Length: 499
Image 1 (tube, helix red, strand yellow):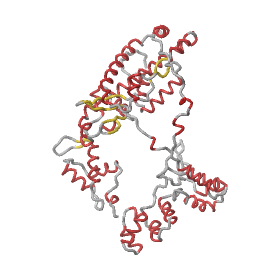
Image 2 (cartoon, rainbow, N blue to C red):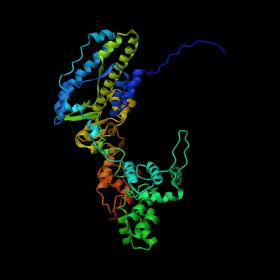
Image 3 (spheres, rainbow, N blue to C red):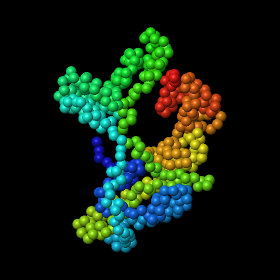
Image 4 (cartoon, helix red, strand yellow):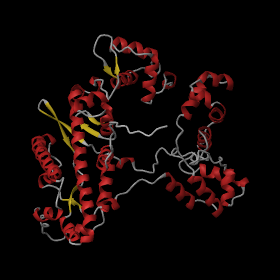
């Protein structure tokens, strides 16, 4: 053993707080970024919301305006904004905050005007209605029904254990240590509510007959059986649901007819009636109002003559600026000077990171538009194969950065609204022509299935042969099956329409 000195040269990446913040903001969606900005506004006293620029305010208030008419104005504004950003970044490295605040232009005085009567009204969100959830609908019926207090407590436990389909889910839950709690039974719910366990099946049957009928069932067979008995179905149909549901799911009507000693026509008629039953009692109920859920695009792609132009969407995003009046007052206190300096640096880093995020999204979107021009002009069938490396090399960034930029970011195009990740597809070889994107192959498969004879649907092998003959696309049968399952399309045996 000996003691000696060695000189070694190594390279390593140091993740500064600024870089970490920029990477974190880059991968946030638009809604998450809005929430993040609101949190920073609450935690940083020197940050404040700026007023919307007059020019942009006029554009946003003109709902009938054609977006293409603002292309040149947006270009000019973007150049000016980029120049201002470069000047700010150069001058902000070493800043005397007191002199900075003294020399900065004073804030614009608030515009005059009396208070409007609308300011005293509650927000419009409080006046909107929403559809009731399944839990609320069932609890209301439970309160209005002929139930005792103990039965109501049992019913509340049952309703509280319904899943998103409306089925009673009593399976155990997984604990943080990896173990699972034991599965429950309706007798366990009865004992917890004070109901006699022997009465639990009777009360559960009463709950299952509430609206929607079949709710709180434990499986599909019980759900259909409750509906069939409640709606007065024939004994034949009830027996098929109770004893031959596995054959019914596979459309094996011959096996049902053979076991029940009926004609195939009678089984057909019974199956037609059974198909009218609801397999998901909670279908028309939702805890969230799907009608109010919308996607706000991050960028717009607008055709200006023969050129496609990418515009960023700043609507709904807070404009941040430094609260000068408050900062001046705080800087007068020597003990708060260090604290305010740190907050000012954090505010500057945040504003710079948000601007860098905007520029990066614009650059990536412009590269996608350049490489997928045929898609924007002619549609999904002309989508070209493209991977992350193609865009990363074009914009001079790493593939991981492109992956963060394209996650949960949306682009409004002349062809519709798409996530940026949608444009990245693997390639499928053609017999003679250039390679085609996998998404275009999926659309070709969907088009063939939509046009098929529903009484004699196409098999996966038939789709393979038709794709090679008509489109020159040569793929394996298992690839067709994989794409079909990804699109949620059933196999040919389950797509057959008998009636």
